[in-house]
Length: 466
Image 1 (tube, rainbow, N blue to C red):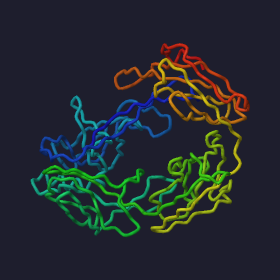
Image 2: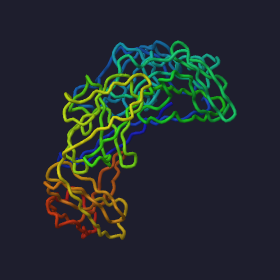
Image 3: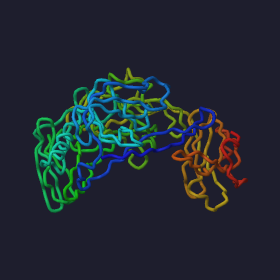
């Protein structure tokens, strides 16, 4: 089962007045446990939506407050349902863990009870009935007192979840594949059925790693993270669902190289299928940092792609080069496409950048109430044009900024004073801030400045002058 964790983030934005609180939902999945008593597991059923009251609006900017009521016809009782129809409630937002059921569609519903009403969230096992079939077969076995699996799930061939690079009809279950569990004391194996479902029965308690006999163009991995599948620790009498993803082994790696023939210390690179490129889109985004010195796209499906540095064409003093396509051209029309086949790895997709706006370095020293300044003191440079540079910490209390020579900057240091909590919502208290110094990017005489904290009191954000 999954539990829902509500995370509340405070976004302070420069392009709107004041501040606003954004609410988001994240689901935390519990690891394997001893299989609980089925009859005390709560209400669950397969049902069809026959009526909706106050449905969620899918238009941008629509009111998302309140609740939706969904009337279900009960098609199958899994546990605890005797009625022929039931009402289930859920939120109406896009980030509140709510489920937006569709009229006439069939679902497996795993709600929780609150004040006598049933509520559904995306952090439960609630899902379309067709997708829930492997789990439903195990739940029916437990309900009917039959043998059930210790570990089960679906093995799928899949791809990274980016619309700009996705391949139509690539995702599918993998049938007839040998799945292995490698434990400290046991090695177990089974095969997937025609629907890609695998099942292990009577698995002894141990910590296991998954393995699979896959063709050379596929490997087991995690989505986005690119990491191997983590091990699972099973207790005795487990009943754990674990879907497994097999990704393509295609890979594109390269470097963004500056005019000095050295890799840039920081560079954002985007990948698009050639026919889906748009300047206004983000693409599949990866980053070249100083430690690695290269960018890399792992688990790329076969196809023809375009690789582009700084696709938004941001004016950024830390990366002062314009949009550039592989191998070193400013337009999509002159870009060189990269065609990648099954199991192909292209490791030399270097992008050479040229031009860029002139910059210079400025050292900033900070005098704080504590010496050295604490780690949550930050240096900020508000720019008259272009992106705000990021202060690089050289040592405690000493920072370095890269400035556009054509820019003008208001530079200060600040320390956030934390949040005041009202229920589950955190609201900012304020910040301590130094005086502001105005620096001209073209002034080569000013190579170093010192910022000192004058007022140690924590000022509410609404009282600060910007």
